[in-house]
Image (cartoon, rainbow, N blue to C red; front, top):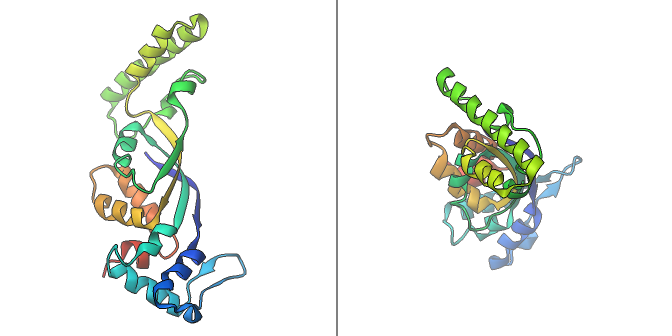
Length: 206
């Protein structure tokens, strides 16, 4: 499974102002902040933003200046696919190398929601073995046990990363992954749909 928390969207105002630079049309800007501090695109600015979005990546450079930061918790097998998007993304992760032995291994730390009963029983055996190795490492500090943990650790192990990306990257992610086999991508694409003006500027499906 995948979860997203603490999402924040930044720099809409500056991005839209920059979108008006080529035609010196700043006087036509009609966006504003509402009473709750949300940035609202006015009719003129939204129309321009949508036209540039549809004109292609050369014309919608302003989308690279709208940033999203979010905490994503997902299994390692999902992160391997997410790491395809190295351009215009930054991520700070919880450390497997430094903190893997700091807490007991439990089933709740793994994405096992699609496993049948037989497979889940094997998973429990692996988790028990990981915990046994963790206890031995804590007691002895023998690096062999640490290596055993790192190399045995299943790809279903969940990791949290604080990720920053921009709207242009989210366009690429959404349209490449919305029909993906992994449910985690559907969850993430559903999150993308909740972002401000996602329908007009990211999804943009006629």
